[in-house]
Length: 85
Picture 1: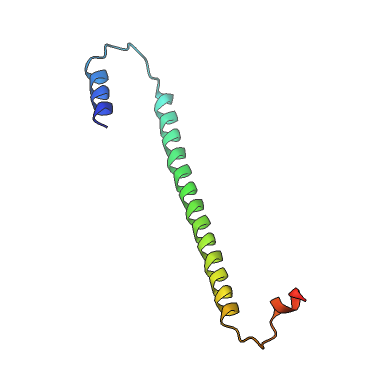
Picture 2: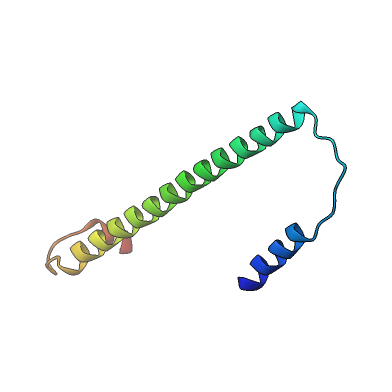
């Protein structure tokens, strides 16, 4: 990390004049790119959180069903036993 910071400082400190022209549309374009990036990160984060919640919910439901099957009395006729026949 220190190497990256040192490199950036050297590039800025020892750079020469660019003699470049930035027209007014460039600022607008950069603003649009920044806004699109922020929105994309937000949508991606929400999608990731929804995915994790769905997975956890499925795992919890699976664990509850497994617990019910394990704790069921032997003489009880269950749907799974019916499918096994």
